[in-house]
Length: 272
Length: 272
Image (cartoon, rainbow over the protein chains, first blue to last red):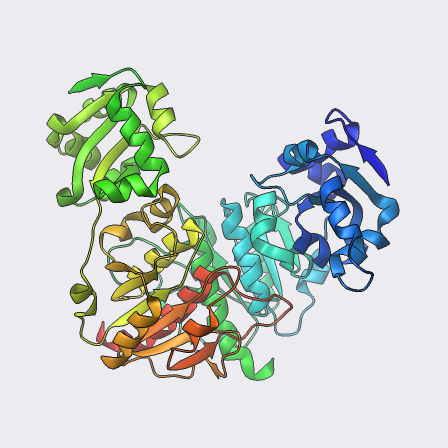
């Protein structure tokens, strides 16, 4: 294992750029993950390099082979592991208490054909979601609800943002997703293929529990501050509403998405 | 209006302490809010003082009376408004782009008697929720779902934390809540009063859509990392589970709470 002690090292500079800039991540087709749990759960085929602090490495090296999944993984990947100092870890990290382990990972990516290729699909369509935590929660809930794929407008926050990754957990490696330039066009394509598109909308006439979601369908969720653009909402088959008591204006975007996805999930459940 | 130009001013030091320390907030029985929206939505009875930047004040002063709710409010509260510099605003603010308006606000508080005094109540019981954003989302969703009150273990994050306030929106002023030293004891009291307590639990036998939530009931939600303590879960009438597909271990705590609260809300809806 090579040891890196200077923050000016070009590898370290690259890691900082990968953390901060979606442009850098896109250019290289990789992203940075942090923490034992994520580094352990990432499938082998995505892993490229590990960066571990001397402190954590010593701790891990003491574990008997077979006794600790994370330790075993680091041993397996020894040739692609770099040892770093705590100071460098603090510089690379997105959190205030770095866990001492980072990995450079390939971005999972899917073609339009793969995204369309499901029997009786359930899609989540997101327009311009801005909060990385919300997007991460949507991915994690989507996996649990058995959603086929998440389709996002280009204006949606980068799913490889460190904050999104923290809240998706490892769902990011399992939930198919696609960014599209024209979400409206995508809605048209889905409808032509028999997918019924429901827009979550405060002006919806039907309550979300009324439709039958056991067929091919999609939920369309708008931006946190402004909801869906009218021209996007108009392209859906139907607007549905989540009724609200009290005086709040809207639910959190991830919460709305989750409530809808679980409504569909439970209707579809006999077929799980 | 008095103008404050020094960050060393004792009023400004107090605001910083109120932002950072739950102990200071508790001692004074007040908290700090930030942003036009929240300052506008806070009921008069809770307001104590406003702090506004010279820049925002000039903008607001230009609005004709009656044309802008926020401008009208600042005019009304003129005698309890202090003018501050952008530098001071940056120091007081919890965000990277301060909105230039802050208020010191009394903490809403409720007695045990008030919390118990509902016909056919629906409670959300939270054990040691740590993420301020999760707690805020729980409050906001609880209001929308018609929850009677949120009851929290003492180990739950402070609801007057600036991050919680941002995600509760103004629900904080409308949703009754209580911190209790012994959540188990509270569960016993509720059950004695005929409230059926459902623990959200990965070991639950019944699926969450099966029980009838139209009677007096409560959902018990655990901590983000560890779920409910076994000794707390055991005190519930029943453990219920939100089924999950895929490989994730659990849903986000606020999401679990929201899915359960909306399940109950929709069953109760004919009576809204």
